[in-house]
Amino acid sequence: MANTTGTKEVKNTLSVTDNRTGKSYVIPVKDGYIKATDISKIKGENGAPLRSYDPGFMNTMSCTSKISFIDGDKGILEYRGYPIE
Image 1 (cartoon, one colour):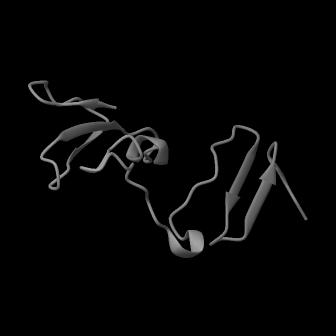
Image 2: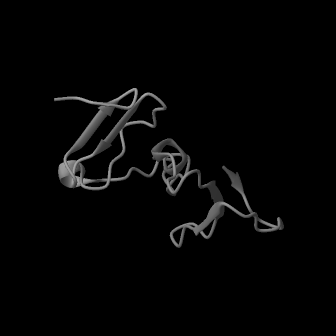
């Protein structure tokens, strides 16, 4: 993530302007998500990192995997293409 002052916008990114400080940031978007650690690189006026809060983990992704697949809404849990039952 980099400060975007004077730079061109890039595809597959999210542009964020911190209205508290006036600084702008470009956050990479990969497969429809952003890394929470990229959000923490945004600092407040006192230097404290910005944190995300997700009560109940309703919008939290633990990892991406090529060997397992989970779709909780559909009740699907697979490991290497095999259903876990």
